[in-house]
Length: 207
Image (cartoon, rainbow, N blue to C red; front, side, top):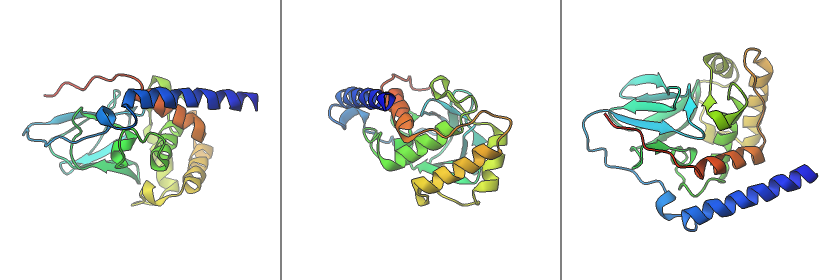
């Protein structure tokens, strides 16, 4: 109980700092979209921490984010998947070329604790191969192979309740023998995403 109280205090402090940085929850932290006027490739970064091994679909192809969370597309929209599970999309590239769970959930950046954002944070952090999302989130192909045994093709995370998601994650974790996985708690997931949002990320260099 004492540990839980300390965690709540830390989460409260992070929320206060986050909304101070946001100027009350909107403004510069709210994701806006660029017009995508250039004709070359666009490079974005997917961040909870930077997420590698995430499937993305654009320009009629399916690729994976690299070890720094980078994805490259000539045109939007960009759809993001974990195996069979669609986790969201962006209709246009964001102005800063950074993509957070809020952006693919159609929420402002200030809505870091929105239920849909929390589901995504739990999912991504629970599938991190070394159980330490603070050093980046790395999702291995063998984990996605197991996910595809548990989650039917065409499933959208927005159609899953939090309980359904946790049940599916429990099955994935129990079947995984090659990677260290564990089910991240709601509070830990929210603390991590708030911590990530408080950091300064540089926009990727565009080609």
